Structures are given as C-alpha cells and as structure tokens.
Amino acid sequence: MGTVSGTGRTLALLAFGLIGASFVLQLVDSISVPYIKKLGFLEATFNDLPPRWNVKDIQFGIWGWSAEVADPDGTVGSSASLDNYDGFLSQYRKSFGAGPGFTGVATGAALLAICVNSFLWVLAALWALAVSIASTVIELILFIVARDRFDNAFRPAFADKHYYNVKLGKGMWIQVAALAAVVVGTWLMIWAYAV
Image (cartoon, rainbow, N blue to C red):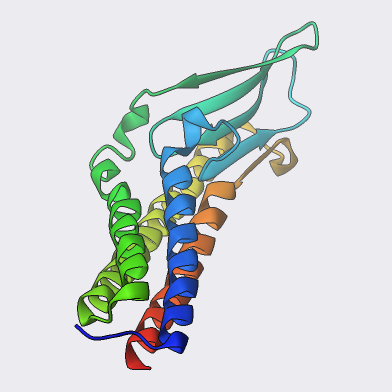
C-alpha cells in the first residue's frame, strides 16, 4: 500500500462516483417490478382490444409482474404480484442480487482508493465489472427469450400484430447504463492505481 498522488485521488474520486452510480442503478433495477411498477425488463402493451380484453399493459420484472387494467367504465387500475410466474426466473433470482452486491463493495474500495493506493481496490472493481457483465448478459438472454416466447404465445390469439407489442422494458436500459458506468469506473480505478 502506498500513497496516492493528487491525480490518482481525482481519478479515484471519479471512479467512486461512477461505480457508486452503477451500484444505485443496479440496486433500483434489481427491485424493479412489482415495487416500481413501470420499471420492468419486459413489457407487453395491448391496443384496440375488444371490451372483454381489459388488460392494457403488463410489466415483467425479476421478482414479479404488474398489470394495468382498464375497467369497462374507462377507469384504469393496476395490480401487482410477487407470484412465481411459471417459474420463469426462479433459479436465477439469487444471481440478480450479486451485481449490486459486488458493485457496492467496489464502491467502498473506490472510496478507500482515494486515501490509500492498493491493487486490492482495483481487483474489487474488476470483480464488480465481471459480475455486472455476467448479470447483464444473463438478463439479456433471459428476457429476449421471454420476449420471443410471449410473442409466439400472443400471435395465435391476435391475427393482427398491431393489437399487441412485446419489447424489452426500461429496466434493461438501466442495467446497460449501470454496466457502462462500472466499465468506465473500473478503467479509472486502474488508471488511478497506475499514476
């Protein structure tokens, strides 16, 4: 462990900010639906459906789902559930907490790097980067497969595709932004160690 130069401290402070932002984004993203109803990884919207179909919007997250339902009188309500919808993510749920967890540890390491120069802090940032990449890739694979499955399930019920739209939700883009922040933060940690 050595002393940190002024430039190294500035770079470590920037890394702390970026890795900390990634931690917050991943934490919010990991709780998403049903707690934050409009922040899902997968969203299905329905347009111009017959009156017997009263679902307008369904958001799927890691822990559950949320639906926006239009009553016949025109009022729009919502419901959310923590149900294990078809066991879709049950075996992967534990891995989704790893990204924010390791990124939180790397945030603490970046804070310590402002004071003391050690390669351990760089290793913590590299570990958070690896876990964040793995988490993003797993989420992309799972939710792209789910999007295609829902699209195939809805296709027979609705002859015209303009009645429904299934796409990746805002949660996926937040995860990508968190990954970008941890990539740049890790690069700054390496640079802060080198100067």
